[in-house]
Image (cartoon, rainbow, N blue to C red):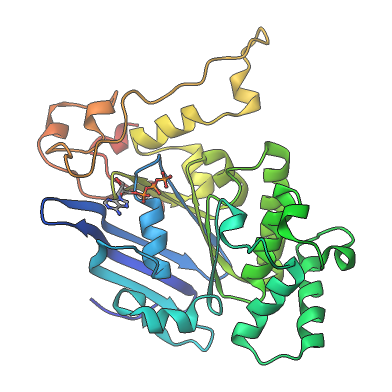
Length: 339
Ligand SMILES: Nc1ncnc2c1ncn2[C@@H]1O[C@H](COP(=O)(O)OP(=O)(O)OP(=O)(O)O)[C@@H](O)[C@H]1O
């Protein structure tokens, strides 16, 4: 496999296999996942719980816990100097050099990144000091700049606050400030707005979009919510049972879904306009029947077949390959042309 990257591509995940291997079972949490993320763009990875989204992002960050390990594939990443690394071959020491500095992360729960015992100013300052030699004054000045970047009102007076003195939305902004303190070229965001109410969620997505333009970073955005995808993504990868089932530019995906699973996910997504019928009554949201099968017991054919309204006998025979669908997308459905 060639290890070259197109000049505009910052991350290229190729046929990634991340498995949890124990003496008794092999759980193929990520099984042959491929996608590219371009410079300055956002790629959303979407799917239900257990589809392999988080294991994909943990693989990129080098944060897999045992017995999880990368069994195959490449994770090509272009650093700031333009050098391409295969993160699939990185050890803990290699990751320490790029995590925080080149690749930063934000999570659903800000308190996993924030220390309750230190002020937010100190924590942002320390983040900068980890990667650059800076004086005390410089640290404080840069921390304040970051709080302003993430649009915390009256930032100077919040610098000495402890995390518990802030609201959930403000803590999320502090976590973003810490992530961006070293100007990473790739931000991995794993469900960063899921715990927030809808209004705050919209504000954080808006902020991320503005910061992306300002800092020019690429974002790998993990979410189960297609509504959020519509707000933030340029391209979308839909995962099911450890595999990519559909991939497309965001507008194409919302205009025409080429996999029944994506259609089902969209029908499950709350959307004010669509949930209200002509009489003004709220329509019950659809939910896909059944649940994601355990990855240790996938059906022999298409993994989605047992839940699929469009399934026909050949779907039971063999897992379908990912095939070109639409002008610029892919689908793992043998009936995609009929959908
Ligand atoms: N330590 C582990 N040992 C065995 N299997 C694991 C382990 N961690 C994750 N898995 C399996 O990997 C699969 C994918 O999990 P993953 O957390 O990536 O899903 P997800 O799409 O991110 O879901 P969620 O939205 O709930 O985080 C699941 O079937 C899960 O059971």
